[in-house]
Length: 89
Image (cartoon, rainbow, N blue to C red; front, top):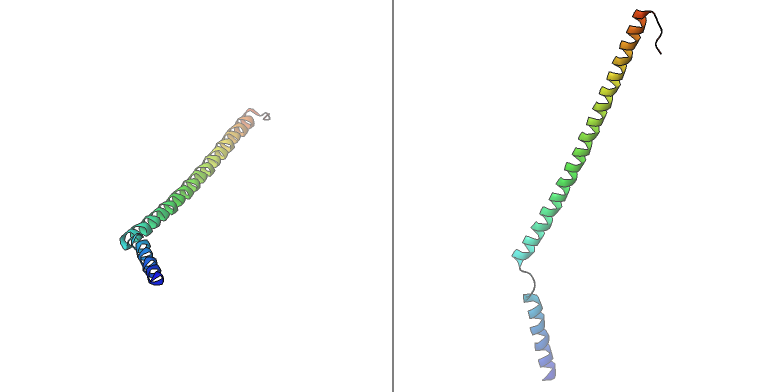
């Protein structure tokens, strides 16, 4: 009798643990939430990398403009020095 009672008790406890677990819908919702958050992180990383690339391109463009301005100023200074017949400093 004790053995049968022990087996029944184990069966009841096992059924209780199984029935207290998450349902199929809950598991699917959890998996979708994980998938959505992973996609959001990937999108944030892509956006961040795109911003870094855009900032780098802007910095290169600004440096190129600065070099062009400096060369233009040097050319003007050379032309003025040539017209005056002197040498530039």
